[in-house]
Length: 445
Ligand code: SF4
Picture 1 (cartoon, protein in one colour):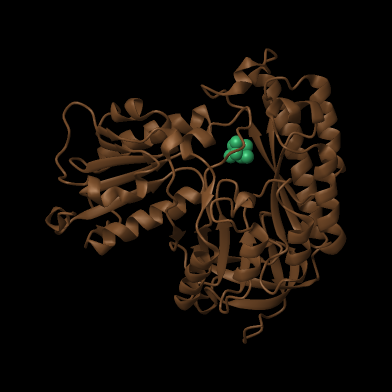
Picture 2 (cartoon, helix red, strand yellow):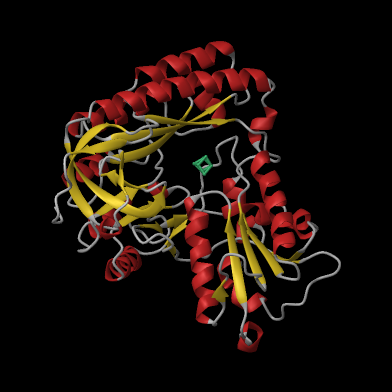
């Protein structure tokens, strides 16, 4: 039973670190508190409750969380501070002893926050910890972030059963699970009813969708494609072995799925992929990229790569670099390997020093810049549908094409959350986006 008097005239501040899934979940926590009458703080106001949704993907992420929690404590003196998210699940005791923390909630309790806010009295000797062991994380809490009027992040899946050797996410988020297709379709209709136009399907391992409901990922995207009002969907990161040829064919002829893929490769060396315990090899990865490009030559393909994992010798890295360079990709997201306690990767003897990691990272970033530049250049002069977003900076606004090219135009409030067909022009001043050739049409395309 929730004591609603606790929330009378209260204001809350929300902080999210890490991935889009966290953003979607923080948005849901915000909605739960808003239903109890808790208002979100305005800039400059002091909050009564602070919710910090943390990340633990690297050692640096943990450090950033600790810094953020201390900063928030100073910004909102006397506020009741609740910390949740992956760092809270993995190291609850450590988090509970960070200055100012009153309550630590594990992954299973994250979206049950209301029942744990019995009173908002500050704790003197460390925060209370309420967290289930990772093996007991079972529930799927639906979430959809609505912070941006244009783009919504719909959580379709949570957790992971893969246990890659370098990763702690399965320990932080538990086993793979998902909501039903019917519930996802209902949430998509809700987004459309509220005027949302773009949905990004989000999860930890979204290709695994359907495991807990005896459904399939292809079934999900087929059903979502029928939701009127949504102009486009993007599929966030999906494992190469789980993006089936059938799903690629479907995206190519779908009404609403954008030709935009984000596929984690992690290494372009088969030996390193084995050490990482990934479930594919470079031949499978190449096949997926070639398959996408064969039927959608204009598709944007973003690829994650980790450099400097244990076991990545100079020879293996060079093999990986050449493989990556040979692929028709649009952009690389390059991460430096970070040692995580409790992972199998720590048993591999060969360690890459920080300087070498940096050099390798720069080499891949150079490849990424070259490929992204070529992808953009190839589209100059072409027609494209752009959905414009609300952010305004230096008198400019941005939108994205279906295939994820960033487009910049002078700010025009009437274009926020609107689609226009444009002819793509040359680069903007700082070469981060393309401009538009000629006048924008006045009617929606
Ligand atoms: S697929 Fe691998 S890297 Fe991705 S969340 Fe699961 S264990 Fe981690």
